[in-house]
Length: 189
Figure 1 (tube, helix red, strand yellow):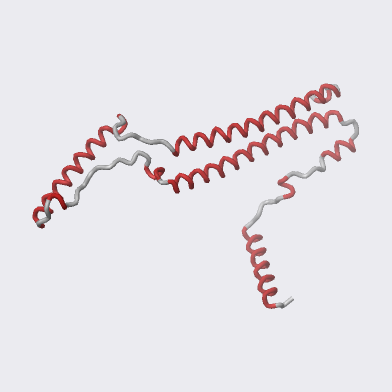
Figure 2 (cartoon, one colour):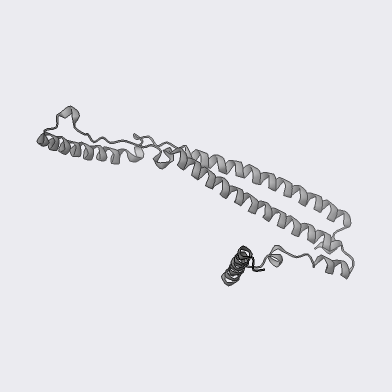
């Protein structure tokens, strides 16, 4: 495919690829903002007690509370507690659940910000990776010598430079670090 392109075609396509990458990255920033706004909306949601979705269950709960309160009133009478001093049961509706807590909202907000930032970085990395592939293909198609193409193939990937870690390697490194720290503390160099 790239062999049939002219140098000008490749140059123009490189410009378009860079432009699209910029637009896509700007889109990531906009998406991050939209996701944060969505989380804020979810955190601030208030569910009214008289909403049709739970009208039946609220009515049933009110009846149960009234019955239990009557039993408490009876027990108080038996114990000689005057009506104005007796404890009472009432049904109370929390329209926000645990999101009524400022600390809980802050905790969830921080988790959302961290996760969205990670998703944004992943998206930008994917955009950069794909842009690099497109540009590499366009440029490689214009390379005339085998030496130039071979040179292009020597660029390492992140996976080449950062191999998978294994638990035995981590345990060995940790043990070695602790041994060095112990020796340094004792002056056993």
